[in-house]
Length: 436
Image (cartoon, rainbow, N blue to C red; front, side):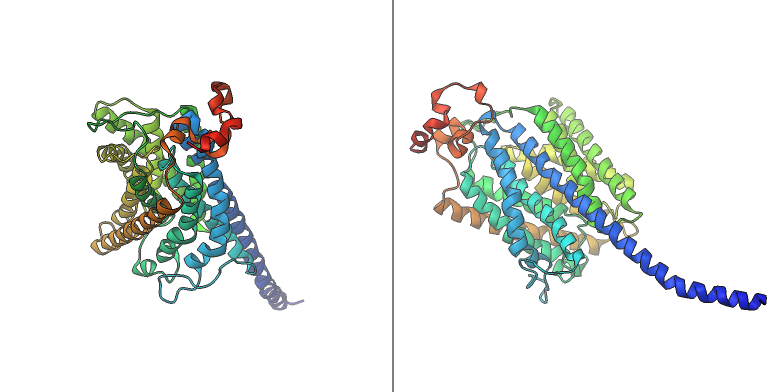
């Protein structure tokens, strides 16, 4: 057979096989991307365990069950409501750019839509859980869950749609919030701020003359392990937001990790500068503040600026808690400072330190608009919601129940039964306690 004919046959074979190879590569890419998004979603799910440990560890022993139950049911109630209502409001067709109009109670859809729903449910649960720690130790449990419903079905998804829906008005402006410094964390933080303003401080938290009294948490071991779990989950939180298993994952995860490390260092440095002790709670909260801060710009920021962003977040976490204490606002875990303040800072930093377009006034203004819109929408809506709850279901428990602890009064069980043998704390006496 002549050489030219052999070459022609080989070329024909390549032309036939090449489309098949392309299809195979496309299918493999879809499978790989699906696998990564699902694994990342499972990692974000693990953050619920981190929040449960951190928040319960910062609370007193008599409220351990209550705090963990709030975290557990945040996930359960929030998942159902976000599937039924929230996902549609956030990612449904949005002709006006303000609210989604379909995808409610998703039942039939392409496989990829279910991947996104699974992943986004975990984000919605995280936003709701941020509120839990701030309100700890004095909140009516049923009233708290009603607030979770409003957060998961309305407050979080509507703002999320503005920023993340392809037709959302903030998204159309070029607003940058890659994985949710504002969409998830500031939304949770501003909701927590509204709640603690209406709740008031825990009994004994502030003196008559304005002095601040510490009510230390019962288990710093829980706090530390919770911090580690949250840090691990953040790799899925930020890395999974790519929605593809791309080659930029290393950059995103490294930015995330280094910002978390810088946040802890920043918190300790500002503590030393102010001649305050190196508290474990400040170190853990500082690292979380760094992670919150980098969440918006983890995919669009050079590594040195990610470190700077995280370090400033750690400083803000300490100063923010001090500011709230001066305002006589009682946030048990520092959620408003760590998630609210640092989420806003991280979103601004994403505009300031944008690779290839640093310090662009237009981009910075867009970021400020997004940050402001989040505060106005969430704070006003959440304050109205919790005010209505306080006037109907009752937002705060009685002074007697708060003194006895919400484990026994709200749930009829105790996290550490061996620590107390007083009959007043027995579940057998729950009915008499309810009358107080």
